[in-house]
Length: 168
Image (cartoon, rainbow, N blue to C red; front, side, top):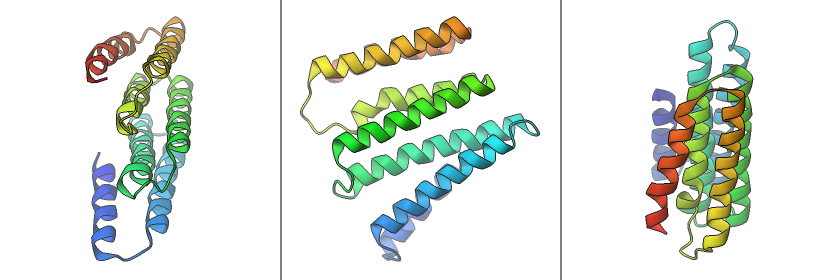
Protein backbone atom coordinates (compact mmCIF):
# COMPACT_ATOMS: atom_id res chain seq x y z
CA UNK A 1 0.00 0.00 0.00
CA UNK A 2 2.84 2.37 0.85
CA UNK A 3 4.59 1.63 -2.46
CA UNK A 4 1.35 2.21 -4.37
CA UNK A 5 0.71 5.53 -2.60
CA UNK A 6 4.35 6.53 -3.04
CA UNK A 7 4.27 5.84 -6.76
CA UNK A 8 1.02 7.79 -7.06
CA UNK A 9 2.56 10.80 -5.33
CA UNK A 10 5.74 10.46 -7.39
CA UNK A 11 3.71 10.51 -10.59
CA UNK A 12 1.76 13.54 -9.36
CA UNK A 13 4.97 15.37 -8.41
CA UNK A 14 6.56 14.62 -11.78
CA UNK A 15 3.42 15.88 -13.52
CA UNK A 16 3.25 19.12 -11.54
CA UNK A 17 6.97 19.80 -11.91
CA UNK A 18 6.94 18.88 -15.60
CA UNK A 19 10.11 16.84 -15.21
CA UNK A 20 9.57 14.26 -17.92
CA UNK A 21 7.22 13.75 -20.85
CA UNK A 22 3.96 12.00 -20.01
CA UNK A 23 4.86 8.87 -21.93
CA UNK A 24 8.14 8.46 -20.06
CA UNK A 25 6.44 8.98 -16.69
CA UNK A 26 3.82 6.34 -17.43
CA UNK A 27 6.42 3.95 -18.79
CA UNK A 28 8.52 4.36 -15.63
CA UNK A 29 5.51 3.75 -13.39
CA UNK A 30 4.51 0.71 -15.46
CA UNK A 31 8.07 -0.60 -15.22
CA UNK A 32 7.95 -0.15 -11.45
CA UNK A 33 4.71 -2.17 -11.36
CA UNK A 34 6.27 -4.94 -13.42
CA UNK A 35 9.33 -4.87 -11.16
CA UNK A 36 7.09 -5.24 -8.10
CA UNK A 37 5.42 -8.25 -9.72
CA UNK A 38 8.76 -9.81 -10.69
CA UNK A 39 10.41 -9.31 -7.30
CA UNK A 40 7.29 -10.55 -5.52
CA UNK A 41 7.17 -13.65 -7.69
CA UNK A 42 10.85 -14.40 -7.05
CA UNK A 43 10.39 -14.03 -3.27
CA UNK A 44 7.23 -16.16 -3.11
CA UNK A 45 8.96 -19.15 -1.50
CA UNK A 46 11.27 -17.33 0.92
CA UNK A 47 8.81 -14.70 2.19
CA UNK A 48 5.28 -15.51 1.02
CA UNK A 49 3.44 -12.70 2.83
CA UNK A 50 5.88 -10.04 1.67
CA UNK A 51 5.87 -11.46 -1.85
CA UNK A 52 2.08 -11.34 -2.10
CA UNK A 53 2.07 -7.76 -0.82
CA UNK A 54 4.57 -6.79 -3.52
CA UNK A 55 2.54 -8.56 -6.19
CA UNK A 56 -0.68 -6.92 -5.03
CA UNK A 57 1.03 -3.55 -5.20
CA UNK A 58 2.30 -4.38 -8.68
CA UNK A 59 -1.21 -5.28 -9.84
CA UNK A 60 -2.60 -2.03 -8.42
CA UNK A 61 0.18 -0.02 -10.07
CA UNK A 62 -0.52 -1.66 -13.43
CA UNK A 63 -4.24 -0.83 -13.15
CA UNK A 64 -3.30 2.73 -12.17
CA UNK A 65 -0.93 3.11 -15.10
CA UNK A 66 -3.47 2.01 -17.70
CA UNK A 67 -6.17 4.17 -16.09
CA UNK A 68 -3.88 7.22 -16.09
CA UNK A 69 -2.89 6.67 -19.72
CA UNK A 70 -6.53 6.48 -20.72
CA UNK A 71 -8.33 8.97 -18.51
CA UNK A 72 -5.88 11.42 -16.97
CA UNK A 73 -3.66 12.16 -19.93
CA UNK A 74 -6.17 12.85 -22.66
CA UNK A 75 -6.66 9.43 -24.13
CA UNK A 76 -3.01 8.52 -24.58
CA UNK A 77 -4.29 4.97 -24.93
CA UNK A 78 -7.49 4.33 -26.94
CA UNK A 79 -10.46 2.82 -25.06
CA UNK A 80 -10.29 -0.63 -26.62
CA UNK A 81 -6.56 -0.98 -25.96
CA UNK A 82 -7.00 0.22 -22.37
CA UNK A 83 -9.77 -2.35 -21.88
CA UNK A 84 -7.60 -5.14 -23.29
CA UNK A 85 -4.61 -4.10 -21.16
CA UNK A 86 -6.70 -4.07 -18.00
CA UNK A 87 -8.10 -7.48 -18.87
CA UNK A 88 -4.56 -8.79 -19.35
CA UNK A 89 -3.62 -7.43 -15.92
CA UNK A 90 -6.70 -9.10 -14.42
CA UNK A 91 -6.00 -12.43 -16.13
CA UNK A 92 -2.32 -12.52 -15.23
CA UNK A 93 -2.95 -11.57 -11.62
CA UNK A 94 -5.66 -14.24 -11.47
CA UNK A 95 -3.18 -16.78 -12.79
CA UNK A 96 -0.65 -15.68 -10.17
CA UNK A 97 -3.28 -16.04 -7.46
CA UNK A 98 -4.12 -19.58 -8.54
CA UNK A 99 -0.46 -20.52 -8.88
CA UNK A 100 0.32 -19.32 -5.37
CA UNK A 101 -3.02 -20.26 -3.79
CA UNK A 102 -3.59 -16.64 -2.76
CA UNK A 103 -7.16 -15.60 -2.10
CA UNK A 104 -6.16 -11.99 -1.43
CA UNK A 105 -4.44 -11.62 -4.80
CA UNK A 106 -7.48 -13.13 -6.52
CA UNK A 107 -9.76 -10.66 -4.76
CA UNK A 108 -7.51 -7.77 -5.85
CA UNK A 109 -7.51 -9.07 -9.42
CA UNK A 110 -11.29 -9.40 -9.60
CA UNK A 111 -11.92 -6.12 -7.80
CA UNK A 112 -9.89 -4.45 -10.53
CA UNK A 113 -11.65 -6.54 -13.17
CA UNK A 114 -15.09 -5.48 -11.98
CA UNK A 115 -13.95 -1.85 -11.79
CA UNK A 116 -12.71 -1.80 -15.41
CA UNK A 117 -16.02 -0.65 -16.99
CA UNK A 118 -16.38 2.08 -14.39
CA UNK A 119 -12.79 3.27 -14.83
CA UNK A 120 -12.92 3.23 -18.61
CA UNK A 121 -16.44 4.53 -19.09
CA UNK A 122 -16.82 7.02 -21.93
CA UNK A 123 -20.48 7.69 -21.27
CA UNK A 124 -21.73 5.44 -24.07
CA UNK A 125 -22.99 2.19 -22.59
CA UNK A 126 -23.87 -0.97 -24.48
CA UNK A 127 -25.67 -2.94 -21.81
CA UNK A 128 -25.35 -6.25 -23.63
CA UNK A 129 -21.56 -5.96 -23.84
CA UNK A 130 -21.26 -4.68 -20.28
CA UNK A 131 -23.25 -7.46 -18.68
CA UNK A 132 -21.69 -10.06 -20.98
CA UNK A 133 -18.34 -8.93 -19.64
CA UNK A 134 -19.60 -9.24 -16.07
CA UNK A 135 -21.01 -12.68 -16.92
CA UNK A 136 -17.61 -13.82 -18.17
CA UNK A 137 -15.96 -12.56 -14.98
CA UNK A 138 -18.50 -14.43 -12.89
CA UNK A 139 -17.95 -17.62 -14.91
CA UNK A 140 -14.23 -17.31 -14.23
CA UNK A 141 -15.03 -16.92 -10.54
CA UNK A 142 -17.22 -20.04 -10.77
CA UNK A 143 -14.35 -21.94 -12.39
CA UNK A 144 -12.00 -20.85 -9.63
CA UNK A 145 -14.54 -21.86 -6.98
CA UNK A 146 -14.46 -25.41 -8.37
CA UNK A 147 -10.67 -25.42 -7.91
CA UNK A 148 -10.44 -23.51 -4.63
CA UNK A 149 -13.01 -22.81 -1.96
CA UNK A 150 -12.57 -19.04 -1.88
CA UNK A 151 -16.04 -17.96 -0.88
CA UNK A 152 -14.97 -14.32 -0.73
CA UNK A 153 -14.75 -14.34 -4.53
CA UNK A 154 -18.36 -15.45 -4.78
CA UNK A 155 -19.37 -12.61 -2.50
CA UNK A 156 -17.27 -10.13 -4.51
CA UNK A 157 -18.94 -11.17 -7.76
CA UNK A 158 -22.40 -10.90 -6.24
CA UNK A 159 -21.81 -7.53 -4.60
CA UNK A 160 -20.08 -6.12 -7.69
CA UNK A 161 -22.93 -7.00 -10.02
CA UNK A 162 -25.67 -5.67 -7.78
CA UNK A 163 -23.80 -2.54 -6.74
CA UNK A 164 -22.60 -1.57 -10.22
CA UNK A 165 -25.80 -2.44 -12.10
CA UNK A 166 -27.76 0.60 -10.83
CA UNK A 167 -24.96 2.91 -12.03
CA UNK A 168 -25.56 1.89 -15.64
